[in-house]
Length: 96
Image (tube, rainbow, N blue to C red; front, top):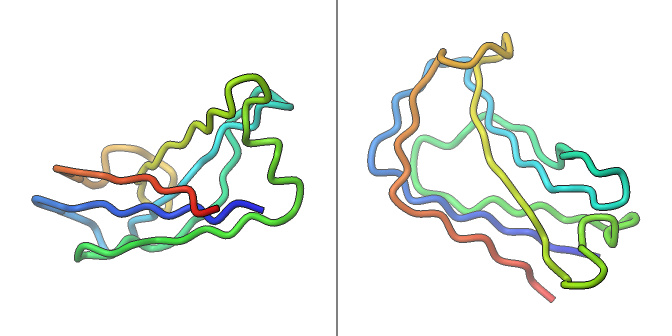
């Protein structure tokens, strides 16, 4: 299994009330980004944990053991540009 933790330190965060934060991990078996978390974003610094138990090895590159992750924000309509995020630091942690 993988316990995936994101900590983002926000210098400034301007957000419409209907914003959505998504976390995606790269699925090396399918060659596609896979959404693993979707939630309303925090307006303060906060850690987000995503627990992946089923077929977690699909997110680990077999030869290098690399894991690729990305975070994004959109409005609930899915249209980018509905909000602005300014992040001064992120930390991705894989907990063994």
